[in-house]
Structures are given as C-alpha cells and as structure tokens.
Image (cartoon, rainbow, N blue to C red; front, side):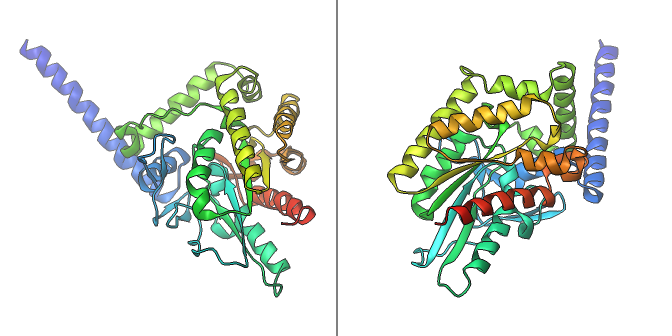
Length: 330
C-alpha cells in the first residue's frame, strides 16, 4: 500500500512540476512574443467582468487599460474603446453607435487605425468649420453575438443617445455562446489555456469539416443560433425604427479562411437578403477582402497565429462604412 501511495505521490509531484514549468515557460514566451490564445486569456482576466445582468455572459470593466497583442486597449467609463462621452450630449454632436465583437473592438490593431476611429476622423475633417462634431463609439466586446449586442444596445442606448447604429456582423455570430462562467483555471493559467485551445483546434480539424461548410450549416433555417440571431436583429431593427435611428449592418468576412470557396459568396448573400427583408441595409465587405487578399490571406492577419483583421483589413472596413455614410448623410 505504501508503494502505491508513494507512486501516486511521485506522479502528482511530476504533474505539479510540469504544470509549474509550463506556466513559467508560457509566461516568459508570451512576454517576449504575444501568443493569440494566451493574449485572449489575459483579455478575459484584465478587461472583462461577470456582470449582474442575466442577459450577457460578460462585459467590459470600466476605466481600465491593458496591453494585448502588443497593442494598448483603453476602455472608458462605459467599457467602450475610446475616450469618454460628454454628458449631457452636446447639441452639435452626432453619435454613431457601433456594435460588434473582437473585430469591432480592434483586436491587435492600434486605436488610431481601428475602422471606427478612421471613420470618425474622416467625418470630422469633412465637416470642419461647419459646426457638427461626430463621435463613432466603439462598443465591440470579444465573444459577443447578435443577441448580446442587442442587450448591450438596450442597456446603453439611453445613455449614449445615438443618431446612427452600425452592427458589424461576423459569421460566427450565429453560434450560441454559453452563459456559464469560464473555468477559473482557464482564466488564470496561461499554460492550461494554451493547451486547451490547441486541443479544441485539433478536435475541430479532425472532424474534417471545412470552415465554409461549418458556417453554412450554422446559418441553415431552423438552427437555434441562426434563429436567435434573426429574432435579435428584428428586435434591434424595430427599436431603431421606433426611435427614428438609422441602422446598418456591415458583413465582415472570415479572414482565417479567405478563400474563393463558392460557399462563402452564397452564405453572405443569404445573410444579406435575410437582413434586408427586415428593412435593414447591409454592406458586404467580402468582395473587397477577397480582391485584395484572396491570394494571400495572411497579409490581412494581426499575427501568424491570429487571423483577426489587421490595419489593412480595418482600412477596407473604414472605406466601406465611410462610403455608405457619404452616400447616406445623417
């Protein structure tokens, strides 16, 4: 019996040594060079909170700053990336409220190059000396989908008092995101979080299903996530119409798999048609992304292991959004 307990003790000691060594090594490597899965774990611990509201799984902490993927992310009092709003709202100020997830947040992109900042700067340059000041409010939160973005709008809309709403739609927004809290181990151990993400990726790959097929199936009628998305979009559209606020959807493509796969154009067209049936105008940036980066999608990535759109991708998004606003002035 003593031998058994002794052997178990040695096994446990080895596991502890491996975990400790892995944690030290991971923290050392990530200090020198950002690792996507590790940086996302840091994001969850440094910038997110579990809110008291039951309609979202997490929210941004107010008035905090963190350096992630080598880029500073500074959140204001409402948890938005950018400076605080002036309240009460100035009479000469027009506010554009931008909802979305990590792409909208500008993950891995310096603040001045995020599409929301670029559009704000362009609008204010155009209107210089004419009396109107524009604020493009970046309310992006990583791992949000359309129902959660609707919840955020309903909660913050009265304080923000927007004159325009943009929802930046990514095709994983039709996924159902669990409301349960993350594991404390995953939130605080960079090594275990890294291993967990690698195992998830390996598990997905061995299923042999292409990303385009996965996202196409995700948007089939009757799929729970897609049905929730449509209901949330309809409610957001109705709320905006009731308050006389223009609503626009921008489709941002999957740059992780920016191929000329014939399923993607069909998928984006289906989403576009469905939202327009709700009287929501849509701009689709897929043609611009595929035209510029279809032959080498990694050129539009934040990092080799992080396919979020980089500064070049945000320029495409800014051009599309700005172009729509010039054609449809507020």
